[in-house]
Image 1 (cartoon, helix red, strand yellow):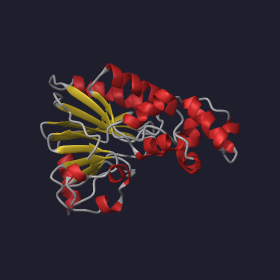
Image 2 (tube, one colour; image 1 turned 30 degrees about the vertical axis):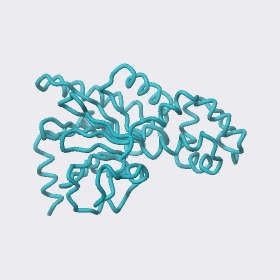
Image 3 (cartoon, helix red, strand yellow; image 1 turned 135 degrees about the vertical axis):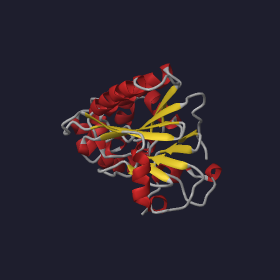
Image 4 (cartoon, one colour; image 1 turned 180 degrees about the vertical axis):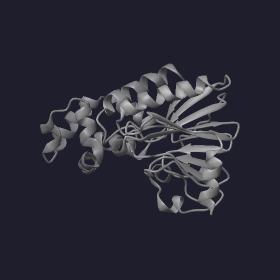
Length: 266
């Protein structure tokens, strides 16, 4: 399993689901995390984003730049690679077919957030438009996205974008599965040896808590609902922001995850 990392000295983890350019929701959720962290006993804390910070939403550029700065300033702020980051890098490295596919998969909104003129994204692109788009985004951004780790391990939890292939040892997982896997992982009841915390698959009514995995992608870019999971000493809890709710921050308190897991197992 290449590109892995460990939470190190952190004892409390907050994992955040797929952002897809929703800088506004990220700011709200970070403020909720700050309040939640302050209300608990003092602890060393790590923030981990589960990938797909780009595409579809309106603010990918500012979100990427902000995350780059945070990761450089704070070693306990981690962004994992998602399949959208992989697509973006592959496309802007010069693959015209991948570039055309990426534009239709959310890349058009990403380039507009970088200040691209609509003419650059609306016509059937050629290599000229691809090179102009890559120059607009910049080598530093592409290099940072390309180097993002694929996983983060904390005690008996594994944080990853899409999931893992059941029956394959963690050290033998492929990047493609970690970034793209779907039903083979989602439908598996197998004990993976760790609880996998993932995004990638939207569950609008989530989080999706199962005995062997926790899915926290609640479709922020289209639902306006962004979810984080807290983890400390084996205890899990959830925080959500949803501008449509009566209360802007909805907290699923400790213990709720156990009830959800029991319900899912039935």
